[in-house]
View 1: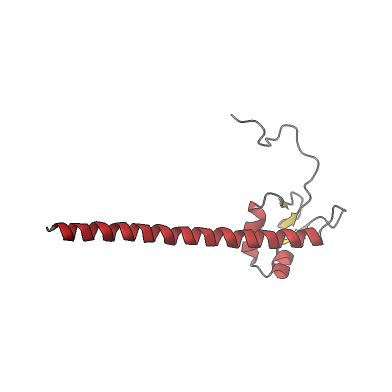
View 2: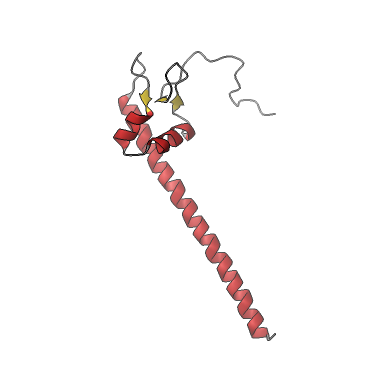
Length: 115
């Protein structure tokens, strides 16, 4: 093979690898941006529509989805990964709140100790 053909193959392969990486990086940034926007939207709505009073602490996934124009699956995902949104541990399922229950076990791992 001629040196110019080899050089062309190397340049083409390097260009393809760089283009592939740039596409992956652009998709990653888009996903993180959309997640951040949706997290902020759900958090703001919960902040405005919940309180720490009995009966007003939790809102359903369906209500959140309806008011934020997100799908129920998207709301479940956003609420489950948001560090300030808590899932109800009571008898009713699929309820979310910004107000964490206060009666936690002293033996519960809170991530304070590293092994």
